[in-house]
Image (cartoon, rainbow, N blue to C red):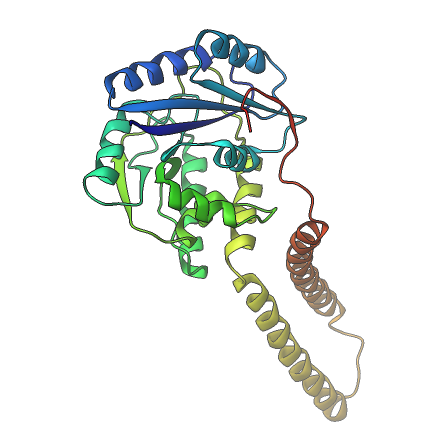
Length: 312
């Protein structure tokens, strides 16, 4: 009996590339005749014809499955839904924009089946085509994460990854609401092989990840896999308490020795504003962790499925 490979494709307004992606992944699947395939398209509340195209593909190809959310829940929810509904012995996650080359799939399968790896991940060795400022901050994020977190996140890592069923089940066991898959992949462990490739630009359409969205996503990752910001805020609090105490002693000594002239109010105002800013910054860090805890405690579902052609 052939092994089944599940290909999970999160989609958000991807009508321009879906047919091109389907043609390419079908071509690759056709070359891998030793395996059966299912293609799971997760429609994450798209406002274009993404769902319509998914249904059209499903009508002409029984391998095509689709999950459509009631609204936009985010890519992380799409990834989780695909994992949850997949039935394959091997599970592959890739984007629909063809920046994740389906042609790498045979090599990825070989690494698991013949070399004994539990997962095969991909990373870009270049960021050709990206704005320089975006590339700079991306590299800084990976450096920062690897310094403040015990979970290793490889620079240039893509979500494009092939995993064993055991690997996927371990990810599903982590049912947290606030998800950061790049960190979760590293946290569960297992033996992972990394494949490197040159950056590929989108086949069509525009990226859905603006600089602001990427910034928020990076903050999500830091909060999910490191408590160092809490330690930094505590250290800053202690440091400024010491500075304030030293300044009090200095002011008392100066008043006793030289009197109390009305000079120095600009510097005093600057100090007050600076210390107030540090306090607000630290409170903001605490607020972020509290907000994540609040969302987890509510126990809301990670996604809501409006319609699907996947039988339970």
